[in-house]
Amino acid sequence: MKDFAVFWGCTIPARFPFVEKATRVMFEDLGARPVELEGHTCCPEGTLVKANDHDAFYTAAARNLAIVEGAGMNVVTPCNGCYSTFKETQSHLRTHWRERDAINERLASEGLRYDGELKVTHFAEWLADEMGVGLIASKAKKHLWGMNIAVHYGCHLLRPQPAVRWDDPLHPKKVEEIVAALGARVIDYPTKMQCCGGALDRVGERDSSLAFARRKLHDLQVHEVDALVVVCPSCFQQFDLNQAALQRNKEDIHVPVLYLSELIALAYGHDPDEIGLGMHRVDVAPFLEKWDSRHGDKARLAEHFDISLLGKCYSCQACKDDCPVCKIDPTFQPTEIIGDLIRGDIDKVLASGQVWKCVECFTCQELCHSDIGMAETFRKLKELAIAAQEGPQSVRDSYTMFLESGTLGKPKEGARKKLGLEPLPASGGDAMTRIMNRGAESASEADGEDE
Image (cartoon, rainbow, N blue to C red; front, side, top):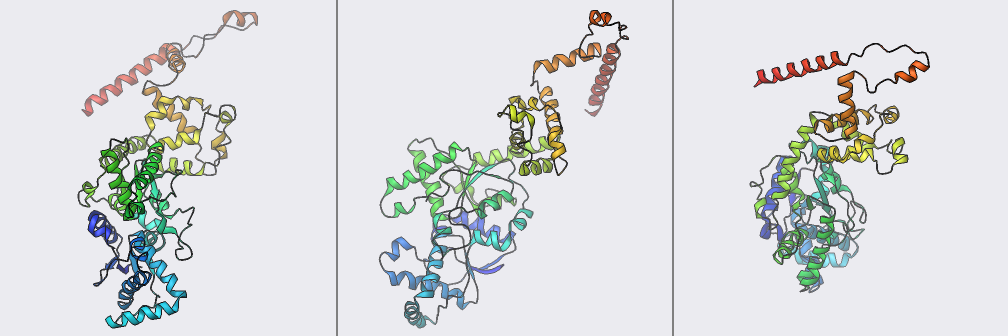
């Protein structure tokens, strides 16, 4: 579905035009053709309107949908609240036909009729189910490699059933699949399904609303996320504007907040200024700076490893419990070391000393159905560790002995003599040293010529 009516709602155009801009850019990049129709009002918002007038709530919602039906279209909205209002209205008026008839009598004066047959889709639902993660990922120009991103779905994107039914209401995954397809590491966290608490602000419970925001933001900081992705303007307001309020009160909180469409627009190569990221209340510069640095980490890693194979290895983990060292030393987790590499933490891996616990038995390689294994990766990491002046001193001392004597140990001539063994031939250590020195000199000369 690439032709549809778009319903922006009130909050995005009025308070967060940068979200509208990013969403328009995203639609264009994906080849969508959204149509804006005249005559729409607030969806309306449930707490503020329905509590005052049940009939006004359903009449206004039905009128908005009738305008779309009159144009012969379906509707996509980037707002959880609008989505929830429309889905609730469809479900309610489908069974309460007398109310629907009464509403249609009112709408007839404007030449409108609500039948309820149109399809109402949230833009995240449109991305996941209409476009698909494969298409979304294929258009990315700058992947989110090495970035840790958490997702907040928001209550009205998923509930209540059966009015809303496109992802698991308690254990959703579709938005996270989109973020992961763009190359990020999706971080799970205990308060993921907790309400943002923004509705409390609308009824005068400011302190309670801030308490909701504070709890989740602290949780996200503990899990060291680089950004929180939301799909609802009310949730964005709670975690961006209200986080800024907490910061003004000198609270130690800083979690950049991005709308899903903003994240996609950035991955598609759009400049942060183009989509207005500077209009956020919570500075997103730390996220952007880390993202740029991660691309440097990726380039560095690509000099030594096949990154696609590392990713395949880490996503499989079929052999994670087969390493013989793991069975003796549970602190050695080779698959997590691969994960650290993918996350761009190569210096951390080299400094930790964990790579030296790989005994190069090749069990993982023999068991690997993709013939990857981890032994070769760990061998290369050991080389990089030595080059970085990391690793056991015993390894460097042994190498020095090898260059000097051609062996890794001096023979015990007394024991050999007792056993009637002849003295060993002279070592070629001196020759080996000369060869290696010549090689080093040649490499140095070649570097000088390149300069």
